[in-house]
Length: 109
Image 1: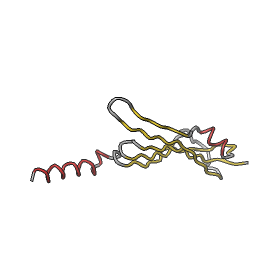
Image 2: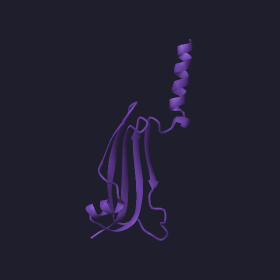
Image 3: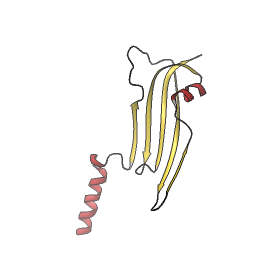
Image 4: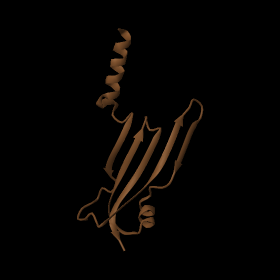
């Protein structure tokens, strides 16, 4: 009986809104906040960085690669004028695996 109560409590905690984002997160938020008078643009490109973090007792094992810098992603994809940008975050298992992506709306040559 006590084991069932513990399992029910843990399930409710993990599935409740208080624990939102602990197991899985996939959100899009504005990265550019001053958008007065700008249009979205004809082109949409994205670029991101990946991070794997393994928490251990004494040392943290972390690997991060690629870039999500706005100017670098725009240049790499041929965007000449940036109108807006969003940040997309995908995370699994308390952030052990994380992908941060920048989405750029603008114009190409």
